[in-house]
Image 1 (cartoon, rainbow, N blue to C red):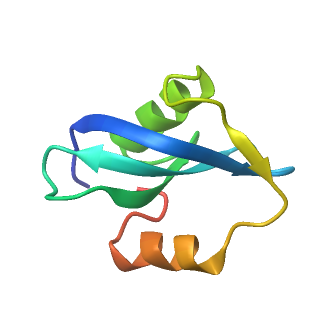
Image 2: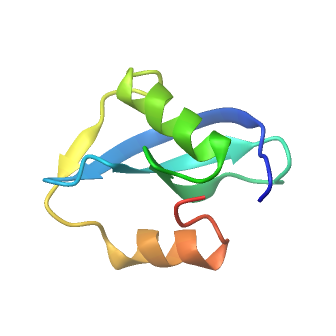
Length: 85
């Protein structure tokens, strides 16, 4: 497990019917550029849960509800090791 320091996040999206995961773009102090991130209510990492709660409170703007998530976003999240973390 590793802790990330959240700088900010933008473009939160939820897939209709799945309100435990929020897809967004996140900035962390420890990384040189923003990354696709899947924040989860049940994330094992504290920064994942914090991003989820802050997004649900509207801190990163309105959450867009989509019918499906583009594979490019999901693939990007997996490639940088951020899927659910």
